[in-house]
Image: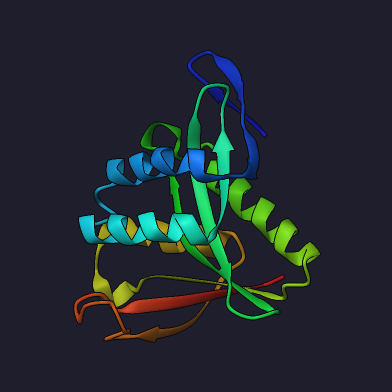
Length: 163
């Protein structure tokens, strides 16, 4: 994919990431303080080692990432997604979702799930996140307050996308 930035077109390639990309992904997450707590970043560090990682690379560095894991032979879940602040609203997050959707579908996965802060959490940055998922074809399935591992002030919205 390509996008317009600072007077010129920039090419971004999406591919599977590996161990060498983990520090870049964590650096992006640390920049996104409104979304990721220190505790979340520690958990992300572990997940980046065991979940399937996809990265968006411009000519210089990782500018976005998404991780997934298979819950069973038909369902996968997005565990983490992030795009560098300077690169947001350029289509990179959408391209990452499109890429994994195609890849997962080719593997026989039928449903993609993601969890995010529910509307009841009344936290403005996640309004944008929910709209993004809805724009990408995800449907709100359920909200669970006191979701295991999430605090009582962090109701969990579960979204699904049929592949």
